[in-house]
Amino acid sequence: MDPHDDVQRPVYPAAQPVTERVIVTAAPPPRRGLLSYVLRFFLFLFMALPVLFVLGAIAAGVHALSGDQQIVEHYHSLSHTATDKIAIITVEGAILDGDGFVKRQIDKVRDDSHVRAVVLRIDSPGGTVTASDYLYHHLRELAKDRDIPIVVSMGGMAASGGYYIAMAVGSNERAIFAEPTTWTGSIGVIIPHYNIAGLMKTWDIEEDSVKSGPLKQMGSPTKPLTPEERAIFQHLVDDSFHRFQAIVKAGRPALAKDPEALAKVSTGQVFTTDEAISNGLVDEEGFIERAIDRAIELAHRSRDAVKVVKYRNPASLFSMPFSARAAATPDLARLVELASPRAYYLHTWLPPLGAPF
Image (cartoon, rainbow, N blue to C red; front, side, top):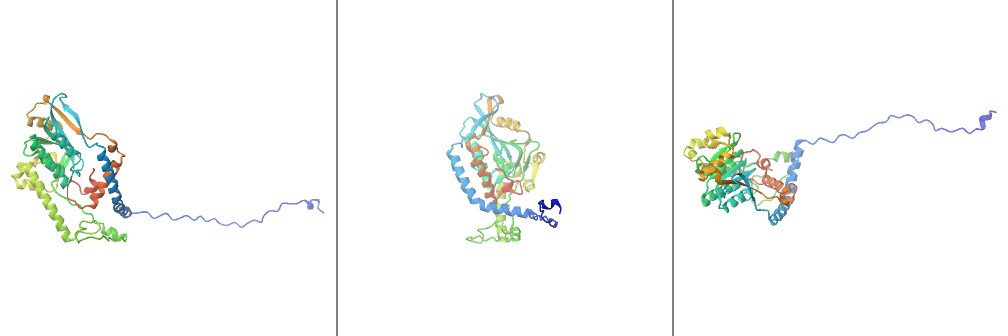
């Protein structure tokens, strides 16, 4: 007998057969195409509009209560001690609000008996027909009521509605100055319309609005324009276009006497400064200093006897970049413009999205 037979030996588990491990990976999610993102944008637009209306109304109401509607005068150049003033009224960005900062500048000048002339500084691609005409009207009323000349200084762009309000110079000679790199003109009208009916069909979305009449939904992006709708819109465009030409005639007497020259510059084309001067849209090339000198000349004053001033919005809680008003108003304005058929004096093919506010 083996003396080691009584020793308890460890029991090992039986060897298991080796099996091949199979790693199963989930299929990558399908990539979203451009159409998916476009559709999501429009769905968000229509769902968010009521909420943004409420937010905008609340922010606007609080902004009004804050009392920061007044603007502040700042020294610009020439004499620090002079009593007589040359006022610079600034028009920057898209012209979407007739009662905004530009109108408050006009009112400030109207109430200041020391202002002897105005330099209208324009850097704008234009805006809505109504807002452009509103500001033009009040500029002309200012010049008439106060008996003061208006001279225009064009910045990077003074196109369409921007050129429209430049006609507030009236019949003053040598009153429109443009910088060497200015783009101006774009005399014309556009009512934007975007047809996403094909996209909706692709995504099996049906437009099902309830309306009071067949023309109530005229201009909706969810369907193509009918011949009747297109004719109505064309009539509105033509009416606004003829008014634009009449305003140009009032501000450019030479073009009023030459119908062919007026027609040549009324194609919607934007012009460089040299082209604008050749076509009678601008009087001279020059920066704002030359416009100021011309305003002083028209006011029958001397450079050492006037103070040049400009205006600013005062800083407040509601003018901060991340305030409720700053956050709500631009988005609300863009959404409303997208949802509302409207005529524009504007140099762009995409007015609602391309217009800063």
